[in-house]
View: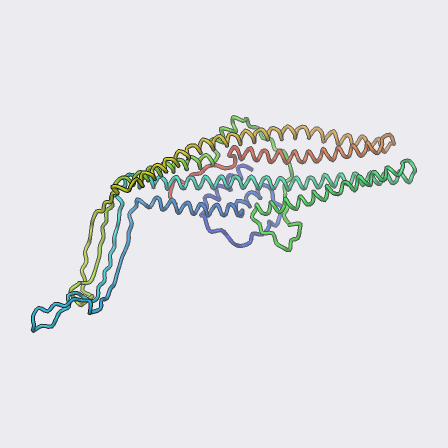
Length: 456
């Protein structure tokens, strides 16, 4: 299952990121296994779809950062016509009429290339920031995927638990109905008092509320799972939505030491990469801000064409190239730039501390998840033994009751103990499954950090 999740995640990251589909997502037509539910969520979960748009936004920011040091090509053009009254006229002799000094129409077109040459290291730093921005965005998305898949696995397990609880409650109800029927026959035969019938009726009535609650809990869990899958529930579906599950609660063996879990988390957890990239970005921010204290130089080159200024025929043109260098250096700004540098350094130190804090929090998360998993495994083992004993106890006490050597109280007590054992066993199965999922999430299992080093 982990490999399936990994493949699905990598495929989702490798595909081109497109705009979120606004069409309604119908519920799956057939029963869903856990792996199918995870794949469905990867494709349709709204949180992940929004996360892919965040990736697009980060990609745009990275392109802006990378483009800062690349040449820019621009074209300009203009046309202007002046009123004759605004044009100075020159009369060279009394015998000649006054001649306009300028053309009343003018136009020009230019093609200009600008190339940044030097900015105190800012452009190289922005190129590195571009890569770090992409890495941080991808790692953040992977953390989002991991959290969402954990929510889906938990919700799927909750649905399976609700189904098991319904089975347990219905089985208990059938046992109590059988006991009530036995008590009524015994009352008719005169072998037991009416108290036995009343007690059996009360026990049966008390069994109905847990069954009703279990059925309602199943509806709630199915709605929660549908939400995490990204499905739109049709209004005509009513209370019971047609979302079916194909799996059942089971305990797959999983062995890992706390040391191995911690080592896996250090390597695989995307949150660490997010914090490290953020720290490196803050360092690049310091370099870029400090570069404002140094001069910046850029070169320009271009080619242009324009009409002649002193000839009334606008079709007669002049053309040629231009080349130049432009330099800027802020010599004094009352400490504004230095203040920005100090602020950037403070953010860098805070980001460095955040890396350490993230590692400590991840270690706590792994240790907590490992302890909960160990607890759930031990509880499951104990409940497996108890349920076998409870089933045997019901079988024995029923046989004794049929032989007339056991009381109704003993039968009801054994049935109650069996119901409790089955309920706790199904709960232990669910807790084991969820605890394992949380431990795998804490270890970074099912998600590998894939960094796109090339440009898209």
